Image (cartoon, rainbow, N blue to C red; front, side, top):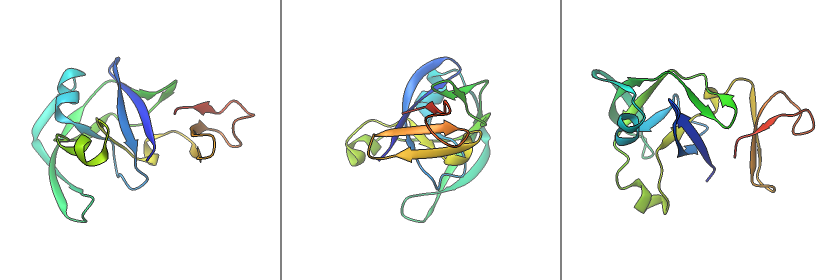
Length: 131
């Protein structure tokens, strides 16, 4: 598992799992409230879950989400209840972040335990390490 730290509206950072299949930023409801996100429970969305089923969620909007110095493309996220995931994963998690949330490309250097976002190639050109 790759965990990255994401700030939302200047709050955090919070641990998010990097999930290549996540269609959008997915955030825990308590974290969304703590970070001052605008919640829209009437705007329902369905998100694919780990078991292949659809899980109910709703939308939230925020001013800024960033990983390190990288501003994420997202201005909205799906809100779900992540209680219990820490037991299953063995560590706390505030949400999921898809690769599509980053401007430019993302590279995983599993040997070094680093994640880079920015222009290719890394890290010689100054690509930003986000984890």
